[in-house]
Length: 413
Image 1: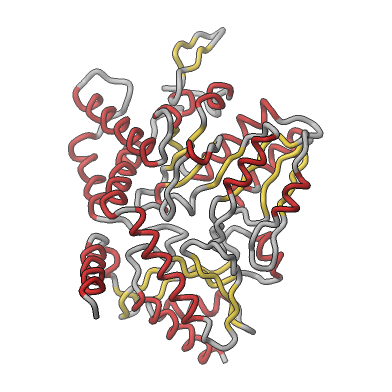
Image 2: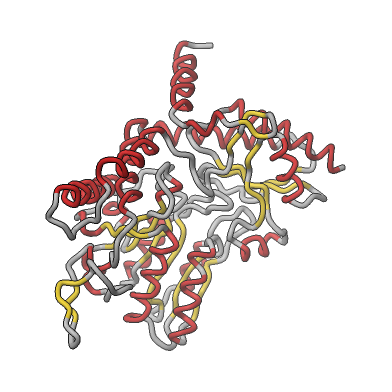
């Protein structure tokens, strides 16, 4: 083994020690955690930051002149600045703290939909969308008498862009699509989508829940209008996420919710709304999680997103090569450009049964439709077995998965 490979192995051993849950045993076996697309594990810097908040900072933000409130507010706003830098937002007030991707998409669907979508209008999504980027648009379309149009896909799980071109017209008010498919790992041609949409004056929302932890995001370079992601998929806490919106759009939209902190003045006759970003952050926020999401960004930056991407790309390539040797295994989603997900089925077996047996061997994968039921219907299957990788996973863990799948096939046969 070369010195460089030894160094990489030593670095990976060090990195894995940052994630205490990876030393867990399941049914007497070492945990092999391959469900990172559902939620990623948390490193010590994030875990310790949670404890630190409650032992040294716990106070409400933006509403107090006392020491703790000012310290908590400073930490909260510092995290917002870190996230703005991470995605290269032009202004930190373009970063809105939400409960997660779902909350961010619902905010845009509701606020934008009520103001800019009317009877006979159209909204475009894709066949690859998570339910959280389908249902909110269905709801607002039903309310407004608008139509939901869907970009079709091919058998590889790639968008058919010629069909997308045909969907574009003056009735389309917004396009909402995923950057990376959560169930197939397909990386969509988002720059092409945004460019074609903007040529007709149509804004675009990107669901970046499966992109933010794997790919470099530059919202100014993308020229995207709205972008949503979740903290818990990028090594941060649950219950926190980000909605990025261009300043021009956020200023146009009316608030999603009413309450404390989103107002300047309130009388029984009239309320004056607060400035950005607070206009969209009603009530006491998830302060601890918002602060600790900044720690997660620090951790990602300390490793390097380029290194993370290379490690995960190697894992996907290796897993694909090894799993392809198993008789009766069929991949679902074979796009040319993929990120961190391998999704497959076993001939004659239900994904749940395979996943259940893998769990007995300490291997955590996700089975089912992955909140993409229309996509599973397209392939004519009830669901898939999905192995999703993070940079702390190893090729040795892939080998354990492969042997586990082989054993599951033998047992089920």
